[in-house]
Image (cartoon, rainbow, N blue to C red; front, side, top):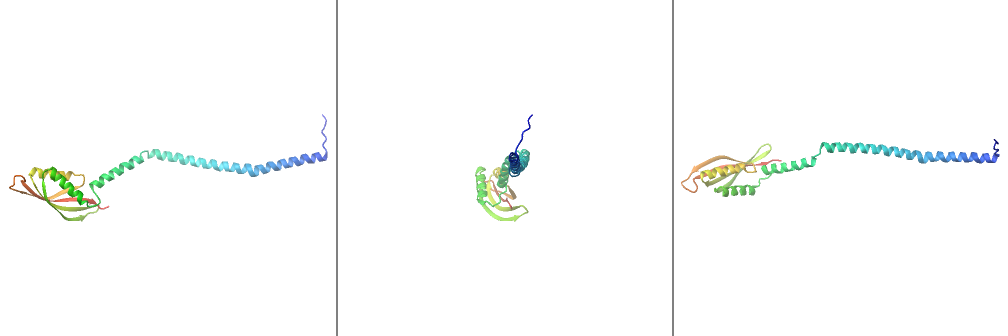
Length: 183
Protein backbone atom coordinates (compact mmCIF):
# COMPACT_ATOMS: atom_id res chain seq x y z
CA UNK A 1 0.00 0.00 0.00
CA UNK A 2 0.96 3.47 -0.52
CA UNK A 3 1.91 5.49 2.40
CA UNK A 4 -0.02 8.64 2.85
CA UNK A 5 2.22 11.60 2.97
CA UNK A 6 0.97 14.52 5.03
CA UNK A 7 2.44 17.89 5.04
CA UNK A 8 3.48 19.64 8.19
CA UNK A 9 0.55 21.97 7.88
CA UNK A 10 -1.91 19.08 7.59
CA UNK A 11 -0.30 17.32 10.55
CA UNK A 12 -0.59 20.52 12.59
CA UNK A 13 -4.28 20.79 11.66
CA UNK A 14 -4.94 17.14 12.63
CA UNK A 15 -3.03 17.62 15.90
CA UNK A 16 -4.97 20.81 16.64
CA UNK A 17 -8.26 19.01 15.89
CA UNK A 18 -7.33 16.12 18.21
CA UNK A 19 -6.23 18.59 20.89
CA UNK A 20 -9.48 20.62 20.56
CA UNK A 21 -11.56 17.43 20.52
CA UNK A 22 -9.81 16.16 23.66
CA UNK A 23 -10.19 19.54 25.31
CA UNK A 24 -13.92 19.63 24.40
CA UNK A 25 -14.45 16.09 25.74
CA UNK A 26 -12.54 16.93 28.94
CA UNK A 27 -14.56 20.11 29.51
CA UNK A 28 -17.83 18.29 28.74
CA UNK A 29 -17.00 15.52 31.22
CA UNK A 30 -15.76 17.96 33.89
CA UNK A 31 -18.57 20.57 33.68
CA UNK A 32 -21.58 18.51 32.57
CA UNK A 33 -21.16 14.76 32.94
CA UNK A 34 -19.63 14.59 36.44
CA UNK A 35 -21.99 17.16 38.08
CA UNK A 36 -25.00 15.49 36.48
CA UNK A 37 -23.80 12.05 37.60
CA UNK A 38 -23.27 13.42 41.12
CA UNK A 39 -26.82 14.88 41.18
CA UNK A 40 -28.23 11.60 39.93
CA UNK A 41 -26.37 9.76 42.70
CA UNK A 42 -27.62 12.22 45.36
CA UNK A 43 -31.21 12.02 44.09
CA UNK A 44 -31.04 8.23 44.00
CA UNK A 45 -29.92 8.24 47.64
CA UNK A 46 -32.78 10.63 48.54
CA UNK A 47 -35.28 8.39 46.76
CA UNK A 48 -33.99 5.36 48.69
CA UNK A 49 -34.37 7.25 51.99
CA UNK A 50 -37.91 8.33 51.02
CA UNK A 51 -38.80 4.76 50.05
CA UNK A 52 -37.54 3.51 53.43
CA UNK A 53 -39.60 6.21 55.19
CA UNK A 54 -42.69 5.24 53.18
CA UNK A 55 -42.20 1.56 54.06
CA UNK A 56 -41.74 2.48 57.73
CA UNK A 57 -44.92 4.58 57.64
CA UNK A 58 -46.81 1.70 56.00
CA UNK A 59 -45.62 -0.66 58.76
CA UNK A 60 -46.70 1.80 61.45
CA UNK A 61 -50.06 2.28 59.76
CA UNK A 62 -50.57 -1.47 59.67
CA UNK A 63 -49.62 -1.66 63.35
CA UNK A 64 -52.16 1.02 64.30
CA UNK A 65 -54.76 0.07 61.74
CA UNK A 66 -57.79 1.22 63.66
CA UNK A 67 -56.28 4.22 65.43
CA UNK A 68 -59.06 6.60 64.38
CA UNK A 69 -61.72 4.10 65.40
CA UNK A 70 -60.05 3.63 68.76
CA UNK A 71 -59.90 7.41 69.26
CA UNK A 72 -63.62 7.70 68.48
CA UNK A 73 -64.38 4.87 70.90
CA UNK A 74 -62.38 6.61 73.64
CA UNK A 75 -64.28 9.86 73.01
CA UNK A 76 -67.58 8.02 73.44
CA UNK A 77 -66.34 6.41 76.66
CA UNK A 78 -65.28 9.83 77.95
CA UNK A 79 -68.72 11.31 77.17
CA UNK A 80 -70.39 8.43 79.03
CA UNK A 81 -68.09 8.96 82.01
CA UNK A 82 -68.86 12.71 82.06
CA UNK A 83 -72.58 11.91 82.15
CA UNK A 84 -72.02 9.64 85.14
CA UNK A 85 -69.61 11.97 86.92
CA UNK A 86 -70.00 15.55 85.63
CA UNK A 87 -67.40 18.20 86.40
CA UNK A 88 -70.03 20.79 87.42
CA UNK A 89 -72.85 20.69 89.98
CA UNK A 90 -75.68 20.76 87.39
CA UNK A 91 -78.38 21.42 89.98
CA UNK A 92 -81.15 22.02 87.40
CA UNK A 93 -80.49 18.59 85.87
CA UNK A 94 -80.56 17.02 89.32
CA UNK A 95 -83.89 18.70 90.18
CA UNK A 96 -85.35 17.64 86.81
CA UNK A 97 -84.28 14.05 87.46
CA UNK A 98 -85.79 13.99 90.96
CA UNK A 99 -89.01 15.60 89.68
CA UNK A 100 -89.30 13.21 86.72
CA UNK A 101 -88.79 10.15 88.92
CA UNK A 102 -91.17 11.42 91.62
CA UNK A 103 -93.93 11.81 89.03
CA UNK A 104 -93.20 8.41 87.53
CA UNK A 105 -93.34 6.63 90.91
CA UNK A 106 -96.18 8.74 92.38
CA UNK A 107 -94.08 10.27 95.16
CA UNK A 108 -94.59 13.84 96.37
CA UNK A 109 -91.26 15.64 96.97
CA UNK A 110 -91.89 18.45 99.45
CA UNK A 111 -88.34 19.81 99.88
CA UNK A 112 -84.86 19.64 98.37
CA UNK A 113 -82.25 21.46 100.46
CA UNK A 114 -78.52 21.58 99.71
CA UNK A 115 -76.59 20.56 102.81
CA UNK A 116 -72.97 20.88 101.72
CA UNK A 117 -70.14 19.29 99.87
CA UNK A 118 -66.95 17.47 100.69
CA UNK A 119 -63.94 17.04 98.44
CA UNK A 120 -62.24 13.71 98.09
CA UNK A 121 -59.14 13.05 95.96
CA UNK A 122 -60.81 12.76 92.53
CA UNK A 123 -64.38 13.86 93.13
CA UNK A 124 -66.61 16.12 95.20
CA UNK A 125 -69.60 14.71 97.07
CA UNK A 126 -72.49 17.22 97.05
CA UNK A 127 -75.34 16.39 99.43
CA UNK A 128 -79.01 17.42 99.48
CA UNK A 129 -81.67 16.68 102.08
CA UNK A 130 -84.87 15.49 100.43
CA UNK A 131 -88.24 15.19 102.14
CA UNK A 132 -91.01 13.28 100.38
CA UNK A 133 -94.31 11.48 100.92
CA UNK A 134 -95.80 8.47 99.20
CA UNK A 135 -96.75 4.83 99.55
CA UNK A 136 -94.11 2.56 101.01
CA UNK A 137 -93.45 0.61 97.78
CA UNK A 138 -93.54 3.75 95.64
CA UNK A 139 -90.88 5.35 97.85
CA UNK A 140 -88.78 2.17 97.52
CA UNK A 141 -89.12 2.21 93.72
CA UNK A 142 -88.25 5.93 93.65
CA UNK A 143 -85.07 5.37 95.70
CA UNK A 144 -84.09 2.42 93.52
CA UNK A 145 -84.62 4.48 90.36
CA UNK A 146 -82.43 7.28 91.78
CA UNK A 147 -79.65 4.76 92.34
CA UNK A 148 -80.00 3.41 88.79
CA UNK A 149 -79.77 6.81 87.09
CA UNK A 150 -76.94 7.46 84.65
CA UNK A 151 -75.44 10.10 86.93
CA UNK A 152 -73.85 8.60 90.05
CA UNK A 153 -76.11 9.31 93.05
CA UNK A 154 -76.65 7.55 96.36
CA UNK A 155 -79.33 7.71 99.02
CA UNK A 156 -78.07 7.89 102.60
CA UNK A 157 -79.51 8.23 106.12
CA UNK A 158 -83.04 7.24 105.18
CA UNK A 159 -85.71 7.91 107.86
CA UNK A 160 -89.20 6.52 107.26
CA UNK A 161 -92.23 7.57 109.29
CA UNK A 162 -95.63 6.02 108.91
CA UNK A 163 -98.57 8.38 108.38
CA UNK A 164 -102.31 7.97 108.79
CA UNK A 165 -102.93 9.27 105.26
CA UNK A 166 -104.03 6.37 102.99
CA UNK A 167 -102.68 8.13 99.85
CA UNK A 168 -99.22 8.62 101.37
CA UNK A 169 -98.56 5.93 103.95
CA UNK A 170 -94.92 6.97 104.47
CA UNK A 171 -93.05 10.20 105.00
CA UNK A 172 -89.35 9.87 104.15
CA UNK A 173 -86.33 12.06 104.77
CA UNK A 174 -82.97 11.13 103.29
CA UNK A 175 -79.70 12.59 102.09
CA UNK A 176 -79.10 12.42 98.35
CA UNK A 177 -75.38 12.40 97.49
CA UNK A 178 -74.46 13.45 93.96
CA UNK A 179 -70.88 13.26 92.80
CA UNK A 180 -68.86 15.49 90.48
CA UNK A 181 -65.38 15.07 89.03
CA UNK A 182 -62.54 17.29 90.32
CA UNK A 183 -60.59 17.32 87.05
